[in-house]
Length: 114
Length: 111
Image (cartoon, rainbow over all chains, first blue to last red; front, side, top):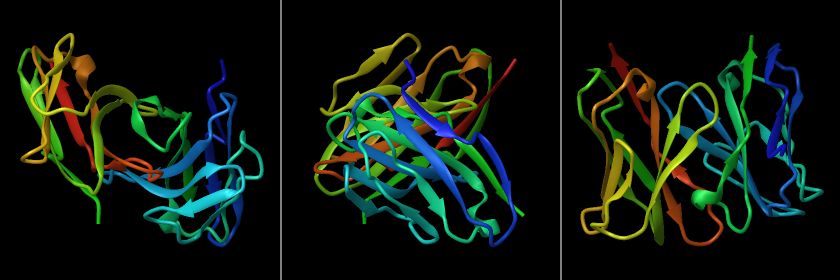
């Protein structure tokens, strides 16, 4: 029972580098989303997807790209990492809509940009 | 703009105390309000509230929603050190929009 799998769990990047945070779910969920969590800031939505081929921006999309070529995968790309992107990133999925009590979170990815 | 505001942002109590965490919301097309507990990793679901005045209860935790005044409270009685966590409140909106989270309340329970 894998659920939502995020990789890597920890990453240190230099300013200007690019990288991709991977997110995969094996529950055939249509809805997936990426949040970032900074100290004292709760969870802020970066991008979300309501199905394969469809993505939309959330509250803090700048500096990030996403794509949804398959139902299972929803990678988050940092184009040119900045120290302000140091954060904990959570991927989430849910079966029939973008929220509710059926949302499943990944374990989180801790990213430090130096 | 949809908004969820939690208070207090942090709280320190002694074991055995009762605490009340607050969540107010301004969201369009409100569907439900959710509470999560977050320890070291991902948030875990506590309650979903859709109707005013109906208390949801799970052990020492309970929560209630007031849709007229647009707020919810989460009560924890006889707190234990294991209750130490960040408690997140989120607004669930109709349609495809994902959850709107508040900043969370960091609760520390000391022995």
